[in-house]
Image 1: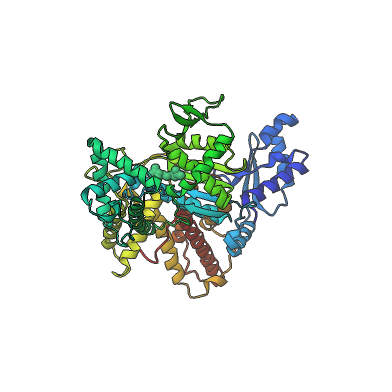
Image 2: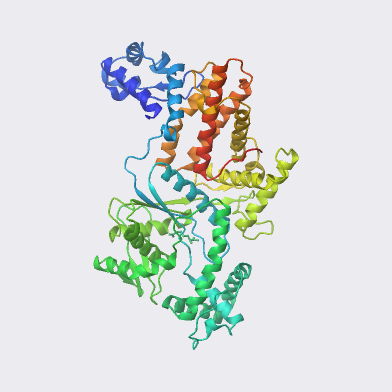
Length: 585
Ligand code: ARG
């Protein structure tokens, strides 16, 4: 289906043309004065300068051409030369009825679908998942779903941080506590045990201990560095220990992400990139891009047009050690080889923006991907506490994701209990869904690049611009539909008769426009803004118009069809945001 605003523009452009003016002036926009009209066109104003006529003359001439147009109920000219439109009830109902029957509500898929790698989540193995990784998971999951909705082949890659110093720290710490383990016996040639020598909770304690110790104990720090080096060199026992850390950690990560309704298509990580480092370095070398700087191998990436300093990208340190950028460049080689993507999108904290700028510049210079492949980074802001500082636990520690989810769920559970309408069996699942909506909508409704304040009370309120309010609207609609004694799927939409009904249809008819814009801008916040408006119009409609008690069966059926379409649109949109609605709440 065509986007509504394009259909309107086409009609108005035709009228400009028939009146003797350039059709390019006929672009329509959503009204910024909804009290006066629904759509408007301001093209007569710039046209006036070209045609040396008063704008109102041009607008009037265009209006005359639209006299018999069935799309509009009214066309008005307003000084100095605006054209104001109201859609006809029949045209609007026809458009919405077509949406109701069309696949994907008639939203056109991408004309040129691409393979897109979305690199998100990015947790570091053996370090607990904390709220810093939360935003990447929430925003990345939503963007992945939006890209997929438009027909792209999307590969979500978690890109585990599984190869750095944290691994050496853990190994060194376990070794100092349990030197007797076979992993540390250089003469051991047998099979390594299947069972890991630690549980996830033990593992999670080891890392902070080791990290703290390395800061005060130089000898230990040296051991950790050495262990990292030996691991990366493929030392057998350390590799086996690393595998155990990975197994225990990844199992826990999977649970955590599942809990968050986030799922990855591939679970690759920094360790998987290691095999591609030699190839990457060879390509860089063959193009003579790298230079030596204090013994390190670097690629200068500063451009004359830069307004700020972009430091060279370091590929190898003087001791030959690889860095974050080395791994990311090697990963690009791997992705190009395995997926040949049209786009790679990374989601991290915005403090990594410079890193990605450097990496992308090297990738371009070295032609690691074809020029048409888009490399893009969305750097998001920080989730702050009410004190405006990065979110912490009450004790001031880093909040673990699990704990955060549990706290929100407990809070919501108490809230439901105040006025409980769900059975005790349904309660945990319902609370979980509301908690997810609160958390995810609270995050996604902000522009990703901005910091935001995590406010449990506000986010989980059933009123206002919140996830639970959207769920509440879906649940209300479901309960109305459940009272209808006919077959919902057979209900036909009729032209709107009330303001509330027309307003709801007007918002519904803008779905394509909103989704396309959120897709083009990789901006889930635009979907949030849209569904907030839609939920508002739906609430007004079912509040003011009697639906189930409407005596005229055809009208009642039309109301039911409208409610059901609204529900389906809302449920599709929240699915794109990564959460879902319960049956009751
Ligand atoms: N593990 C990294 C971190 O915790 C994020 C990884 C992001 N992805 C990437 N390809 N660099 O900061």
